[in-house]
Image 1 (spheres, one colour):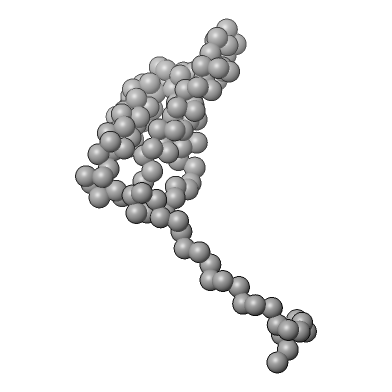
Image 2 (cartoon, helix red, strand yellow):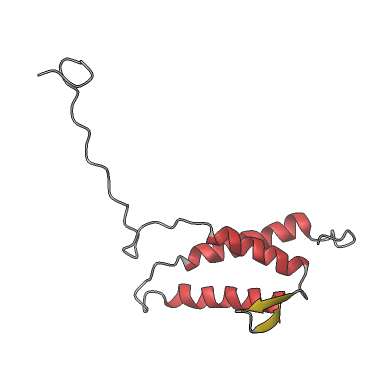
Length: 118
């Protein structure tokens, strides 16, 4: 029997694709851009802390308070996610993004307040 590509002997069949590696929580590894979105949001809140942010188009908060609430929520959920069944949200990834945004602000952007950023 010849292979479809005309090779003889036919190549060995490929092994089946590996399933997602299972993390300690039992779910797939993190993916997405939510950590980067939180990093960008945190840099915005540090650059313009008094900017008003609409919360579900009902209430307005200063950007600093809105981002602080997001970060505190992620800290709480990361600490208690095993009690809530894990879930599909990577709160540690959000916190990593927030840490990166804070570090970027501290190392690259802080002190450039004399030039208007926004």
